[in-house]
Length: 319
Image (cartoon, rainbow, N blue to C red):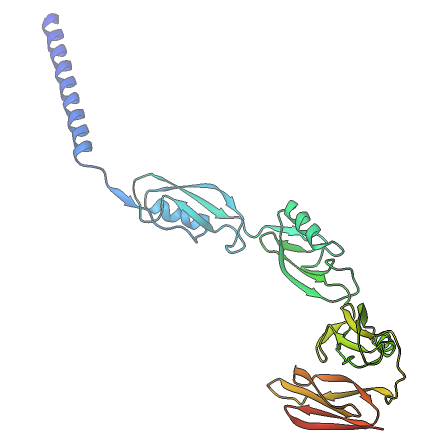
């Protein structure tokens, strides 16, 4: 009786194992031939982390926060990237990896005032900062030195934004309209240049049958704009026997004329009539509202006529 029961139990065990093995094979076959349902990954970029977690959980997906990245464009705690990308098909329980914004990274603005521009570039690079907009202005501060900045020193600023600076161009040289020195005595020219703070450069001599020490050539044309540091080169007449000159005395006349207001620039022309005849000097195009200072050399009696766009606007008699 016991032997019979043991045989029955053994047969039942073998049968159960075969059934289990068959069911396993069937399940495995179904898994291979019939893939499990795949889920389309939703977009969580632009959402808060907690809202993204809820949205993914509803799709049987999980979320893993990989870290934070500073951004001045995206508020803190908002997701800025994800993997896999939205629309990708994945299995259930797939982990979606995301990075969230750490917000704007603020830093205390260092002081750049008093530094030279090149020095400031190196200094900021060491701190992970950079120069933004560079503006220039003439001041009494040495050239290339920073005179102001925005944001101000010791204030919080976004590390991604540059620091705007104002750089000195140094002292601005005085500017003048070039007088007509041709025909003038070199002593007179030197005296006038001293008064106007003009700088005389090389003085060359050229043989001439006329009076000695008279300017024959100047490097800058009359009426052109020059500054006090631009050297003026002159060529002066010279000869071995000095002749007595009976020429009338020359006089320097300074006058001003204001350009009428308007949308267009206007041409300025000066005509000098004296004992040596008539001379025409072109002062070029001048801006609306500009006040033009005109320096004329008149020999003996004469007159100075000033034209704006070929219209006579001023006449000055010289006795």
